[in-house]
Image (cartoon, rainbow, N blue to C red; front, side):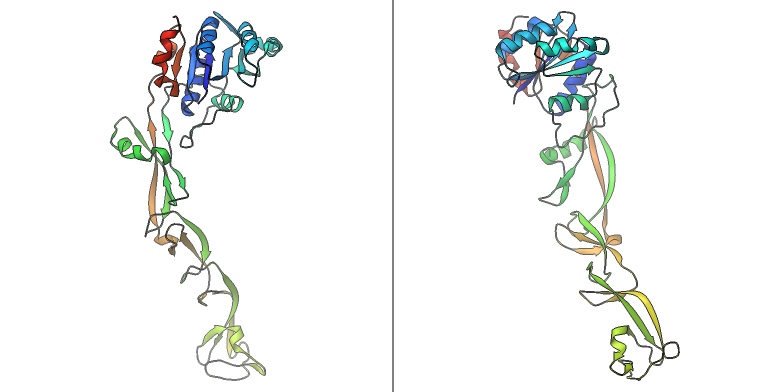
Length: 326
């Protein structure tokens, strides 16, 4: 996976960037000066994006951007410049130097994700506060389950094997997200629709029922019709007269599958896993939890004045750092 170079010495901004990259498991390199940034690019040919401060102590964004463009085209190494509001009038200078895009500091993590095309982990859900500088890489990550189309259940995907460890870890906060109805047979997730309370079919037709007073027979109107008029299909009494011989009840339903006649449909669940049909009231109520996991502090990554590796790159950093003077 390609690395992202962070060229900045503002602690708050670096924490926001590092936290956003950590959510996407993206490797990164941090440089605190222009010279360190040049060294990082020479040592790490897999850097494809540079997030650099336009102007700060020991950082000259324009000079660095021009140096980058002498050897690397925008398609090979993209540059996003970070400017403060009072520097906006100089944005043309940065674009002329070769920057691909600009970020106005302070910025939200979602702005960075959008401009840098940083995609968070599928299992991670996070709500960003509007234009805050308080976001920290030390904030906990909230892992939530998602629907697994293979098992028709909620799963943590690649993090499923960590669930038992989270349950036993006192530093992990268990968060109740929702309560849902699952299949009482296999605990898979069902679909819900109005249907027949006997067979669960969703197909029904509206019927008019006739109640024959003489024999107390009740049936659909179609059973009473004959060529000569209305006759009871049970006692065969002919020429029935509405009001004196029978009563009509409109608005009833007849199931197209089992022919059951009923007054109204019930909420029926159909399990996606075992295909079991059951009344929604008979479903199993299951609590859905997320797990808020504390992340290690990133302070060590931004406290010194030499560039450092983070994310997936941390596994190989010991092989690269000795080659870079500090």
